[in-house]
Length: 476
Ligand SMILES: Cc1cc2nc3c(=O)[nH]c(=O)nc-3n(C[C@H](O)[C@H](O)[C@H](O)COP(=O)(O)OP(=O)(O)OC[C@H]3O[C@@H](n4cnc5c(N)ncnc54)[C@H](O)[C@@H]3O)c2cc1C
Image 1: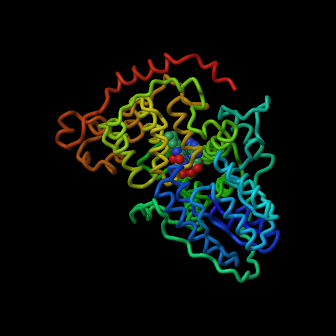
Image 2: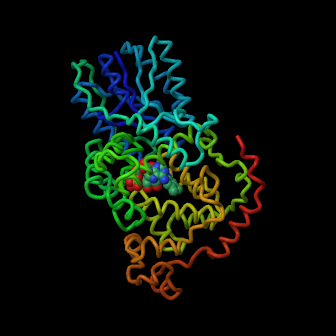
């Protein structure tokens, strides 16, 4: 008997490990509930809820394939080897299949499981699935992982031109096994169920994910280059929660993009090529996670930036978290995060830079808060985005470049539609006042004064970075 161990790959279409297992013989499926581990990783209740709803949909898909889904608990991953070993013994499993996962804890878990199931006479085979290209398959001439996105992108595109990854169809059903599937729980300890309005924004399951991809590629993809920076517009795909939980694969995304661009990867429609670039950013940060494991341990990619004198300012941190900084674009973005579990990419950069530069608060505080609230929380992309914004990361924004939240607001939300959606108290302000309301408007709207002076805080951040020890120490 084969075992497919599902993790963040909750779909039957284009699932490498599932297809491989079924090709080898009769297959059982497993999912581990690990609420304590999920909490240790700061995963958001909205993300756990989507994971469980996706799992429910997956159970239905697997039923069609006659693959029973077993649900077991391994509260922390330290318990996973024993749980799998027991299962291998009970069902006489000869081979466990799983799709590769890339954090340090994930790698350690899989190694421990492989060792323990071997004692039961079972093999452990991992498959490439979460990425287009396997980490380690793309290296610089000197044999190290790329640190600069443009070079990484070039190497990726060359590789993808040579050997575009293909999408696997859903596998054929197997003979019934006679083993009963377990019920999927609606919730797990420690994670509150989000309100229905949030859940309705993110319908679960691979069919919903594929429909969203199809609609995006039919209606929005060609306009992506012009629309992607405007938070008031539905210009981006909002597929990140499905990619993060694996209801959708990056190959399916790449294929949809190629289909709408006459098969062209790096030319043709500008919307398509810039969307493919975003898929490659996703790829880049996961390769960084493997190549430079210190980022998995909450360390700065550039060690010399560990010396930045981050401020302990709990009141300012709370104002940022709760969307009451007195900067309308920042506050609207933070309220979007709290209400929907998602935030527009442009705004993630703006609020991250505001926290780490204008407030000079450690980027790790923001990284953690994002993970605790994002429905698409992903260690690699979140860490990459935070370290980019804080100028502590690979290929990060230069430390002397700071986004001004008021200028960004005028540029990317010129009519203030986005701000008004999330800050209804500012609904009466005109397009001139809304980005930086006058003291009188603030009083009338009961909206707070800015918690920080932009010019002074900018100077403070520049001084903090200018005074750092030289970066030579960062060499590998
Ligand atoms: C501070 C910060 C934190 C972030 N945290 C996360 C996170 O936890 N999870 C996450 O998936 N993304 C994160 N991102 C990246 C990006 O903001 C989101 O992927 C994007 O907003 C998701 O919306 P979308 O699906 O509409 O994206 P689209 O614009 O439609 O892009 C398609 C897909 O490409 C990937 N992608 C896009 N931009 C990036 C990027 N800059 N880095 C890596 N992958 C990208 C995502 O999987 C996304 O779904 C973060 C960015 C910043 C600046």
